[in-house]
Amino acid sequence: STRIAHAQAAALRVVAAVPHQTGDLPFFIHVEDTPELLPLLSSEPYRGMVTISQKGDTSHFKDNYWTLQDRQRAHVNASLARSREMGVEWLFHVDDDELIWLDKPFAEIIAAAPKGTTNITFSNLEAIPTTVEPVNYFEHIHTFTKKRMLAYVNGKPVGRTVPETKLDGPHRFCGPSYAVPMTDGVILHYESCDFNQWCGKFLNQIDCTPERKQSIPFPYYRDSISLFQQFNDPEKHMPQWLDFYKRRKIDHYNTHEIRTAARHIAKMERPRMIDPPPSRQLEGGGAQQHAHAAGAATGVATAVSARARLDDDTDFELVEDLRDLGCMSTVGPVATNEG
Image 1: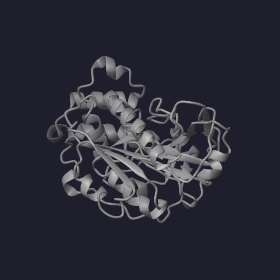
Image 2: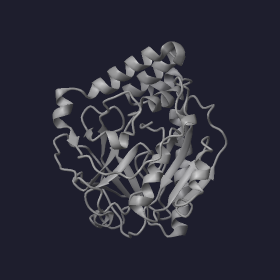
Image 3: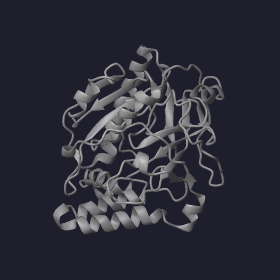
Image 4: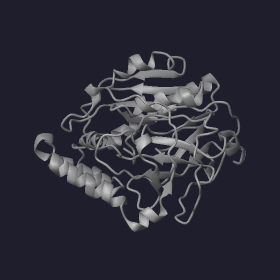
């Protein structure tokens, strides 16, 4: 239900795709410092499906990894309460740099879970980028991996909207859990697959103290923050930024181990996405702004249980279309382990 969306329009792209695929699926979006989202989300076809809340400017946050999680938790829990009022039974917590990929209808997935489950966890795969040029990575990237991932590996959750359910960290809701088999569905995570997005994300971490930085569990994140703390002038330091991104992001995946184990999702006809407004594109590496977003799934009543884990030997085929995607929901990105 929440992750802070990079205003470069990850949120715009995801929400724009939704009416075509999901019908009347409700969304809960918290806008912080991307006011240009408001006219779009208040217009058709989004007006009847999007619930908007607002907060003051947070662009001054330069230690955003941990503070973001606090704002995320508050927004998701408020969305749970609102979902109950609307009769929505399940709330997805996904970021705007993620897609939900289902190989079977969501109703069948929850039917397989033990009675009384309040948390369903989907395993995640990480997208493999190939360029520093600005692209719509949802359309450009078709190859994913779960080996040597740079960000989180513990999946993303769907919560049952009963009163006792609360967000229990970025990757699960509280209560009995059920891990969805990877043959039934996965989360596709496009972590920092846009160079400008990566710049904006980690420029927002430059005030992170050494102690707080060391507590971040991902070396790629810690080293990205250190880079921008040392080299934070886009006019002088763009070569260092590009070199780091090519080495630590693009070249990282270009190994025999990763390539031979990668999962390929065939190119498909995707919904028309909204391009980021020119005024919001990162110019010279300036820090991007953010918006919270959340999504809720409708139309199913059941529950689920267990813990998600990734098995490096698991093999599976992903179908070539998004059939039965009727219960997909999305949220913007959150600076948890995902960024």
